[in-house]
Image 1 (cartoon, rainbow, N blue to C red):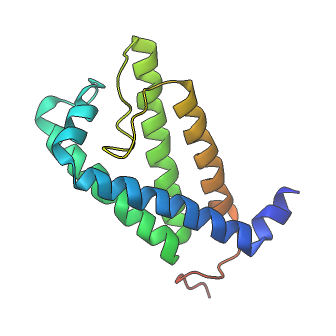
Image 2 (spheres, rainbow, N blue to C red):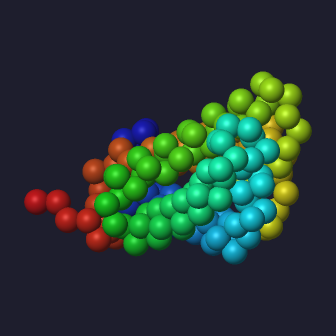
Length: 149
């Protein structure tokens, strides 16, 4: 069954468009709201304060660029792995916040929506990671700008 999913070009394309669009929308919203996003990152107390602005800029632009690459099919496997790693890092940070007993906004959607850190956000990220893995493990390169000999 899993091989049927991996070989279905429309499921793979749907996953790329869904995840890519999500990353673009949240990335752009964070670019436009950098100071607030830096504050939300700071609430996790993981990144030193002097690096918060740099981290907020790097995360926001990386999310946007990765989303564009995923949609347009540029280095899809590498982009998918990068998206997976981002989601894994974000999920780990949320888990750490939960273990510390922090009641903070996850900072995931900037000014678009509010969501506290918690199990629902972890589950959302896990589902997104699984959808990303569908794209990473497919051998189907239709609808991409990647070229394999």
